[in-house]
Structures are given as C-alpha cells and as structure tokens.
Image (cartoon, rainbow, N blue to C red; front, side, top):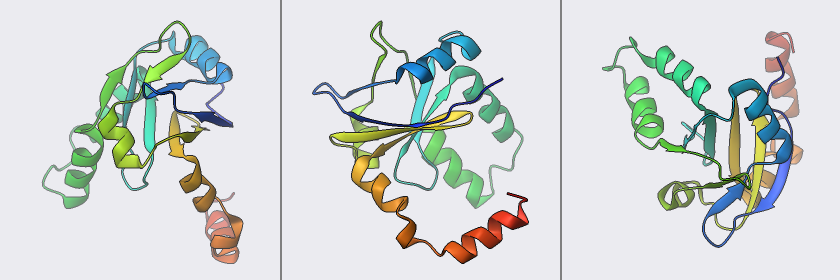
Length: 151
C-alpha cells in the first residue's frame, strides 16, 4: 500500500491550526480510516512528527521492552513520548497544533508539511529551506553513505 509522500506549503492559521493536505487526508482515510493522529516533537530535529494512530501504536511497540536505563532511549522517550498529543482533524481537514509543540519546533507562520512514508513532518518554512539546501551538505559524503545502503 502507498505511503505518505510530497511537500506542501501552507500558513499556520491564527488559532494555531494546520490543514492536512488533501492527498495526505485521502491517504489517512484510505489506509488508516481517518483515525486519531499523534503530534509530537521529533527526536533530533527541530520539527514536529505527525503519526496516524496505527503507526503510533507500532512505534510504542518498538520502544516497549527496550532498556529504559539506556540514555538514548531515555532521551527518545522524554523527547517524543512525553510531548505527544492525540489530535483529530476537523471536517475541514484542520488540526490544532498545541502551542508548546509549535514553540519547541519554532513554528510561527509559514510551514511545510512533508510526507515521510509512515509519518508526516511539520517544519517552519525557513528551517526547512535551510536544512534542504544542497549547498549546505557534503554531497560526496551523503552519496557514499546512501550507496552503502544500496540507495
């Protein structure tokens, strides 16, 4: 079955809501039955992750049973799970993004919603433009690493 793809540019509305783009809403409906979504901090990037309920449950299962004394797991759980907020889209496809999450990710006005297979990412547009600028990466090192993965 298909996965989330695409890059969509929007503006946060005055109430702190985003519009889930129509193609992504269609995917949510077709694959997940328009279930609840979870919005949370990304573990390492200054953006937000949006998970369909079923994908969130899979992530929970991956984390269960891992050593909670491991510092990387502690950081991950504190950063991602402690910030997670269950949300639902309204009839217009909008979702309220909690203020604390917007502040943590530096999301103020212009946003980018990115489909990344099993989840969505929500970025401040300026930050997105900065991290995706090809002039700011070591193209040779990235190409070498991707080749190691067979990509």
